[in-house]
Image 1: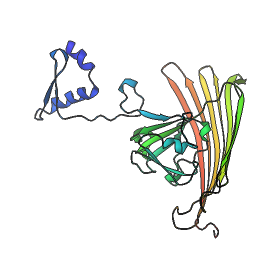
Image 2: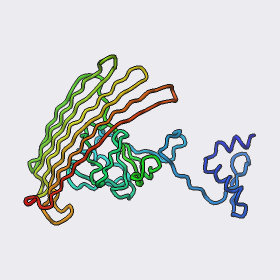
Image 3: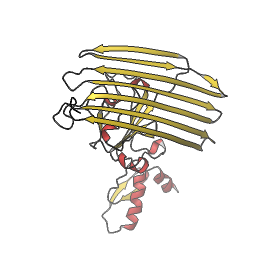
Image 4: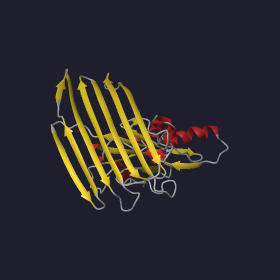
Length: 309
């Protein structure tokens, strides 16, 4: 019994190796002596890969990296914030988060699954549009990045990794903010946000926020101009052990696409619309039922020669 208790404290990889050793008597083995003279025999090394499937924290072998927009980083969009994380590469085809390609651990931009609070944001047309999110950076609470394969849980697009954009929770008090900015090349932007604070509606305690933003620039050279705007809202209500959440947003991006696919003064206009509803019921401390309903619509119009469509 003493040996069994000690073996239970050894890593799962050691226990797996013991099973392999029992069926491979001909394989060469190494002997390791642990505390109090106990001996463990190991065969060939066993490689264990972590998983995003829920598990106890002490046994989690692959961490999830998170980026906080509130951190002191010189970024203006979710794409730029992602670029600050290790093993993540962001190739911006336009500035201010207008369009960007995402790569995790050397994957292509088609091999990263993008989620918005758990909802699938993957674009069936092309991975160039996976980061066409209907949220501004001020609406994001954090960005979670799972480095490595996650296809078992999130589908084929999660071959290289998974990015989950977590929206900001509504504030408990009423308020708002308004910001303006500008710079060279006729660059200017504006952001606005309203918080409803806590309140009751039909017996449901809830909070909500409404946000919007606008950005425009002439670019540093012809064909690099852009004009973007977005509007989004989130409402969360709770009664007893049940919770309901509504998240919706719209984004429009019109920009010069110089040399994107050919040496022509091209132009592109994309529109993204999303709405999602989530219902959650805590039946007990260990049993939770969550239902989701959501939809995403994306439109893309590309003009090869801008002045001669």
